[in-house]
Amino acid sequence: MLLELAIGDAYGAGFEYANEMIFANDLSRYIKHPRHRLIPGSYTDDTQMSMAIAETIVFQGSWAPEVLAENFVNAFKRDPREGYASRFYDFLVSIQYGKEFLAKIYSGSDKSGAAMRAAPIGLYSTPEKVVALMYHCFIYQLGNKSALGKFIESYMPGGCSQPWQGKVKTAARRFSEVGQKVSVP
Image (tube, rainbow, N blue to C red):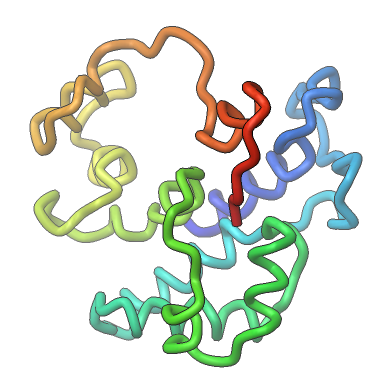
């Protein structure tokens, strides 16, 4: 699973927030992002933090925030790489330990990073332990893609079985579109 995540992550790295590159999105090759120095085909922060979560599972670590934070810091320090949002990258460079991570982290982000990194949690055998229900459904072959929304709704309410209509934006983009300043890590 981590290999597939890394491959998809490395492919998507060339396109993230780069609408001008959409013409090259034909699955034929890895491409260079127009604003990042990351070598095409390199995985990013999403894979690295997924590996930290997988290590927590493999080594049977607790899900205490301190343990996860320490694993995130260790994974980054072991292989500091581009691909993180620049301010988050600078934050990780500036800290040394999980406790420092928790003390200084901005926790109000509405970005999708947590969802991007949660896939290994889907390996747990019972959905009650899982926050990554989509991955769990497919790993354990509990349904097909067309029924995914209904599967998720059987564990948590929220209208997941209704197709989304419209654009998907983060709060930062919504605020910037109306001229307000917002601080996003």
